[in-house]
Length: 99
Image 1 (spheres, rainbow, N blue to C red):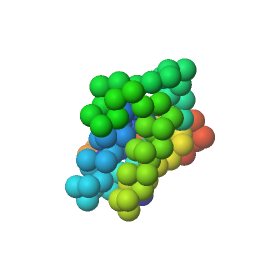
Image 2 (image 1 turned 45 degrees about the vertical axis):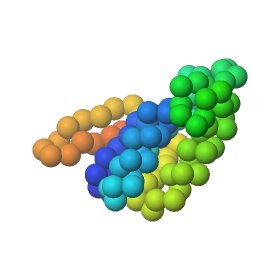
Image 3 (image 1 turned 45 degrees about the horizontal axis):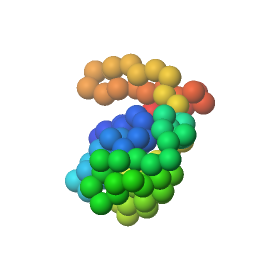
Image 4 (image 1 turned 120 degrees about the horizontal axis):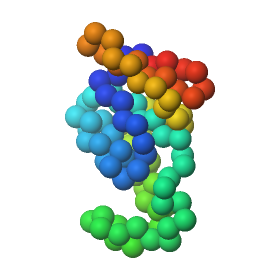
């Protein structure tokens, strides 16, 4: 499938970018290996309406928001390579899939 945008990483920025693009009716794939850097953090701060939220709860709420938009695909994959080709990019995953 050809996507308008691939977002690599499911941290707060990647989740928000996916939401904004999906709301804009873009076909988006969010590639996230589900290994957040803040996994040991008890609270996340500086997110409006979510200050002090547990990272796990933040991700759950974000995924619930993303599922409202049919143009957003979430895939649990680690990206291993990205190669430009003409006007597109080919993304290689650890599982051997090419997008």
